[in-house]
Length: 199
View 1 (spheres, rainbow, N blue to C red):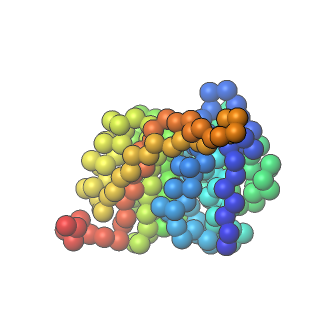
View 2 (cartoon, rainbow, N blue to C red):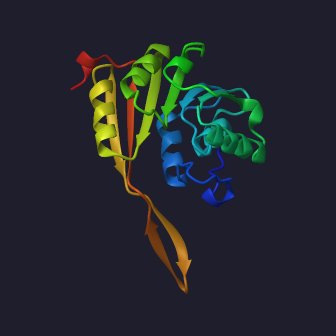
């Protein structure tokens, strides 16, 4: 299936609710691929940028199970899902992880965009939900969060990390300029590779 990467300007926004920018959404989808027909757990939707992108990527045969405790963020996500006609692919719950993960099904793909003070508990709970062959991806803006996630995940499986410095191109007179966005970290871990097999 072909994936449409929506421009950031097309999303509804609310003050104080973050939106994961398009370059990071593209990389996230790549890290979680293949996604068509998959069920995916998302922890923390923010404005729903990743939620929309994942919902498009899983197609009509897939499902997103999303947890977002903030009413403002949830409403923004719902607005964006309606805007792009994707509400039927997403079950959005007003719950926080890790407690909100308990009733959700086992999946082979998961994404953590927000975690609050419960990073370790969320990652361990999600890991227990992951099927063999699954992949868990986390995004972070703080280096200490990225390092904490790596420390937790490398005890569980084969972990990896990228530090991304996105820059958005825009026209400036007859030429182009690139405006740098905030750096971000993408951390992932695969459940099917045993720790002792890593080199």
